[in-house]
Image (cartoon, rainbow, N blue to C red; front, side, top):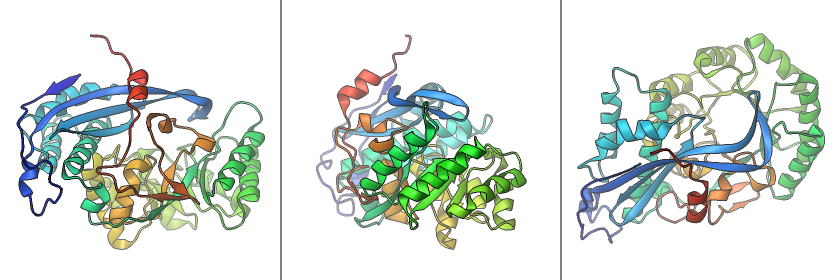
Length: 390
């Protein structure tokens, strides 16, 4: 449902230099619209014990100064647009594009009695991302440049090797061969659901990718104890995996920190945390930090959350959505981003882009286009939009 506000012309919106034209930041926010989009997958996948045939996303679009900013994230099956409409959209009334931090803080303050995690964290994230996108579009600059970065190539890992129907090893080998041919040298694959099969899967990927390739193992919280996680890791250690991601559920982040401190297994964790404070604490005791702006209260929350990791040079490897995270890495620093590439698609996000990002030899090229630089396929967004009852 779209919420419209005051529409007031601003003579400075055509100027792009915020230092010379600070009044641009007084451009009023005109409207916000939150909705869901369901994208069918070309090949179903198995994840967390379920067969996934489509991916559902939450979108928020904010208009201001003749520009539209777009925020997005996964719904994980929740009606996040309702939270946006009821708890966050009203806070944008009579606000300007320069009020991002004030809106973010006000949103958190108003949920004091119900909490600012879970669905609310995702709802605020999608709106905050849209606000950063529209502000930088009105200013005419890419987000990474506004935040002090420089144009560069960001290392990009390929998400691949999901459990699929049919001959598991043949499917994995075909994906790996296609990705290597495309130039990828960094990979992340699910791990832990089937010990005997996983040994064969990791061995096959290492064989195809070569000795120098980075291979990360995503456990999807399948283990209950550090002993279980360590036993599974030892079974494939000879194939030199780079890290073990999410061995435990998100609420067990302190257990992940303890395993990181007490073992020689590199632990990656953090994607499901929604509090910047928890992300900061995690940064002090984890090997690899996995932030996610779409769950951690948006770009504003991401910046606040990763500060400690940047200070202590903890490797930062954001969770998916490289269209958001590659610019943040380019501006603030970090290890690498990740993509679900066409060669091994598990998310379907590419279907909503009119033009695809430039990824050469596994390096994501930051675009010089304003905002996050995404060229949306509006026809497909309309076609995939979930119709809601009125």
